[in-house]
Image (tube, rainbow, N blue to C red; front, side, top):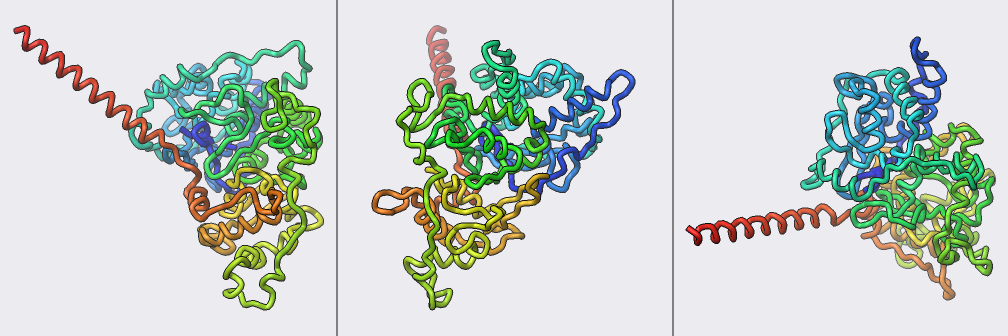
Length: 491
């Protein structure tokens, strides 16, 4: 949160894994030709770029790769980026390192998939590229264990096809300071569009998995999770948040109305919480300045003055419970009929989130009403939270953990698709957005749950690419046949 999957671009989703120490490889002293300050700068930039989240398997060697990333076109394994000369990038020159970061081209000339978000890293300055190179070559311990090879299905396994994708969609222009803006805004823009690669997850994708022009940060599906709209729109984005709230969320992953999970929890655990307060404020200033995209924005991206400030995705629902509907019934009896969702909630959720959804006083177990996960018009994060749980660790907030209810070994209670659908619909009906008749605007089916259980919506791109290549091959055969027939007739 890491295309955090093609990838983070194709869906880059990072798993909910136990957070790792950010500086698992502490910066080593610089050699005689490399000041320690350059090494430290490179370590900080690696943190800002969230390299650990994708290139370190939970419990594994730092930066040794091997993390499996589910994408709509298949499984992608992150690479070993330690300075190992046999399994990593130890033989890379600084120019080759720069080509990999800025253009997605390996030292052997093969193209990388944009699971590594080079579409954002292309904006890094020369000085920052140099500092990162020094850090990875001198501040990271080499690991001589090769990462598994990515084996995408045909034709996605044809890496040379990425050359055409890059020609169409890679914007490698450098970010220059806007003299009309403050130094903080310019710093925030550089971080958000470059190292922190916020748009990689939060910007919608086109048919070929490119970021859509004019829709920056308007929200996108990232594997099983949905990276929400973070533009300043009052209803659909985070326009109702104060500057302090946005800063606090980046620092801790926790507000009364929003809690980080999935790849965003990883980004906060491994990256954002370790950035300086000045840089976090700069990112917040830049995000707040983006054009609003949503139901309260006009054509110029400005929020309409008449927009209702209380009609946002963080304002729906109220404390409510339906336990009386099955009180006195046994568990099996309570699971029948309209009480099923309430019974499942009572048995699995109420002990932490309270019977009425009010959570705990300290907010460790958050309230469920006036909560963005339940107020959104996309149920992916609700289902993903139930299936995969929450695992986030920050210095300010400690270790926040909610057990999964999927098929994991540490699942509190593995629930079937129909049970999760019933639970989700109960939560949406009581704590989410409802219509004038009091009915939930969203309704979840067991099939919806299975999609999230399988890692998120798939893509027709593989099948369409195969069909396209098949049609192209047929056309070539027909043209060659026609040419041969004409040639024979001439002789």
